[in-house]
Length: 211
Length: 211
Image (tube, rainbow over all chains, first blue to last red):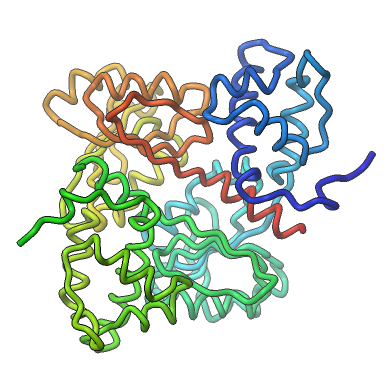
């Protein structure tokens, strides 16, 4: 079986659409469906059937012409392709309001993100546990990560510290940074960066509501 | 003074960039700077100086040629334009792991989102409080929102219920939906929709880390 996932790099927009398909196909499964076509997915999601078929061509699944995809197989293949079935070790830097909230969100683990520790500089947080996850002093990260070997760092520090903490995480072995701060951090080549700016989404919402 | 915010509709990509500028300019202020140019912002953020100047032209601020923008004024004007200084009442539907985490994230209030209630169908959650915010039974929403008058609904229900709960929120007077589920919901014209798919961001991160 050809492992397309490693040979062809899927474009980011396609990759971002795959979780929509997964989510819809899971719904169909819960309704007892066993076969789904790209036309059927297209009807529910604002993406054309041909785009869906193209996006799914990056994933190792074969649809049957004029029939569609096997629902169980599609779910399994998508979850694997998206990395949701593997456990990826992560740490959270900045255990303030949002950081603590993410430590408490056990849902992330179902999607493959296993937060194993939080780091902060506040003495009221250090050496405490939040939702059974230990919080350590940030200064201990490089040392501790030799053992923990987390590859993903979730960045929820105040924006003024975002760049410096990002550099420090990378020094300690972090290969991917999930930036929740509104600050545009820079990372060296080879480090993966994903920005989730809740505040930018809020800004768009507020502006459009008033428009 | 011309109120440009209501006369010209700022494009969404520009709107999404404004919080980056705000965040950087706040950092400059904390470092004692009083004037900032678009060239200076461009150096720190991966956006060209001309794009920054263009983006800022939608906001009611005047830079001085060859000098730049007044830092205090730029912060104040951006925060107002982005809606962060006003309080927007919101409810959270689905007080599971992520929903409860958002109820606990007091940081959102600093950016203008005031979560006043949670709604869920689970009896173990209903009529409890999370982080001082009351949780009510979902069935009570339409009735309760006549008094509460929340305009924003945060959607954190299981994906299979996303569409139906979204329709129900709109029936109760919600004008803007912040969708955290991986489900592609549809909303009628006039209702604002913002999707924040944490799982899509995770998928991109995992895929790129393995590539």
